[in-house]
Amino acid sequence: MKHEDVKEIISCLGGEKQVFHYFKDRYCLDSIDYAMVRQEKSAFKVSELKSSKLGRFTSKPIVKDRLKYFGSGEIQQSELALLWPETRESFVLGLDCWGKADRGWDQTTRNQCNLVLQLNFSQQHIKDYLRLVKPNDSYGPFEYRGHPISRCDRKTMSWVRMDIDFDTNEVLIEEIQNDWLRNARRVLNRLRKRREKAPQTKPNQVNRFIDANYEELEQYVENVLTPYDKIWAEASMTAAINFIRKDLGINNIYYHSFETGIQIKQVCGKPPRSMYTKLPKQFGFELGSEAPKFIAEDKNSKRYLKAIKDPMFYRLAS
Image (tube, rainbow, N blue to C red; front, side):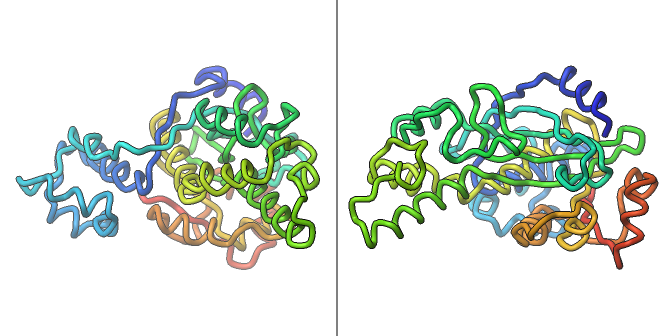
């Protein structure tokens, strides 16, 4: 996308979006809801659901354990939200712009800009973070300013970068990533290793931005962050898909495959393979040779694609 196009979306939709709640496997219920909307149905028969492509979701506890509530043998769209569990994690969604036409640094397919959707921690989480980690600088010990994180008073757990084309009604999800969870775990592991030889080693001897003691840091990483470790990737993908469909009004969603993404974006090193294999399959993306039309017809990315043997992309069936 061009820089002015990204800025226009942010201007229209607001720099900070709504609160987004997530619980394990919420995407299953969202997928069922979306299918009803697309098919203009107010209900699905349970037998119909099980025999469809959505049938893979019926083995998930969030769906399986709740099918018993539908004694009529039908799942009503109006009742799907009632199946949400009481325990949820809350985020505040934010929008930002990424990229300055520097392909080697930006890692964007078209060597243009991306729209960024941020999943920012709730204020309650920030209170726990401040109380336990005791950061001594507004720039936290688990952040990297060189990435598209929130620049206001929010703290970003993860983000999703997207290239968008309204003419072809397509979105390519370029990247889903987090620094915070990985860096917090890394700091704690380094501290534990140091303490094996020097038991009195303090967190600020490993990271100078932390004034917490060992027990406080351990409580934050092991207790406060653990729920996020289990859901961050699928929460990020769910938030992105919902945003693309509901806010942007686009149904054709693509996602990079592991090998093609690395080559076309000139990624240094290798990202976690599961993010480009397990995650898209979990959501029902299907791998194929078809590239997004706006990528295949772009002068720069067309040249990049020709240099790749058998380029592959994931596409989410609409």
